[in-house]
Figure 1 (cartoon, rainbow, N blue to C red):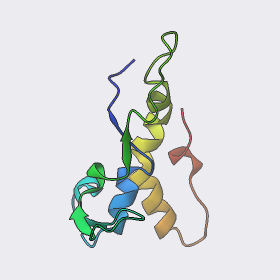
Figure 2 (cartoon, rainbow, N blue to C red; figure 1 turned 90 degrees about the vertical axis):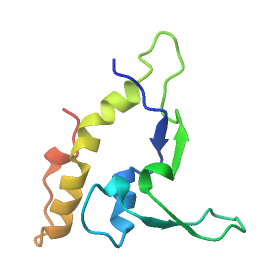
Figure 3 (spheres, rainbow, N blue to C red; figure 1 turned 45 degrees about the horizontal axis):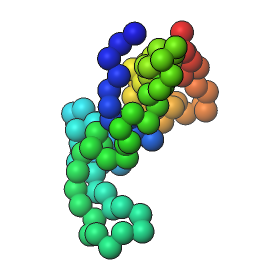
Length: 104
């Protein structure tokens, strides 16, 4: 069991980073425009790791279950998601390497 990170994103932060004008650097740290739905607040600039998350969204609360079960299951996918997306975008024949998306 590993330590559960409290910020758990609805959409992985690395995917949100693809909406940045910046092309270099960690996608979780690239600047993106953010506006809260149904809010009068003006759009603002932030980084993906600070938006679109809920604390302990996927943390299991049962004492008999590993609290990081969901995070542990998605670990392989999250580690490879940047490569998988780039592979998908750059692949002209429409085929995709499923090993990037499968949990091993």
